[in-house]
Image (cartoon, helix red, strand yellow):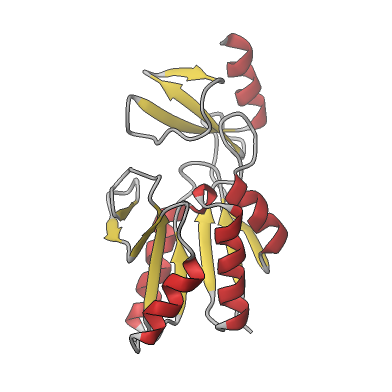
Length: 195
């Protein structure tokens, strides 16, 4: 039986870069992959974008009404084999999407590897990530460091270079002067107390 994998990490931990490396490894061995990304992630449009300057087009942009199981079943009916499904920015998917990915892994015997954030800039969970923490067969943290040198576990939002701790959960970095910085707990609370 194939598994549902959740690889999470703070901003700048190399999730998208790792995703593209995994895709390359499968394809180098003559295997076929499908890459999915939520359409709410406007950064890069229909591409997975790495901060290292590498990008790659996705096969399907998923909106909140989509049924991923049906999308994959339709794809398979066209005689296309899938050796692995890879999902970028999985935190933006909804609970039903994660359930569908789990069902694909279990019933279609296709490994599903998901990359994303665990929490938002206010330390709240994302719907997709929370469901993955409950269902994923394998959960792996991708590590990065805070500017102080400690392990970064939180994501701080900045607008015009200033840390902010209020606002909507979803605001895409590199758009509207929004940036994110991975911080350790100590630095996060230090900046929060100064805001």
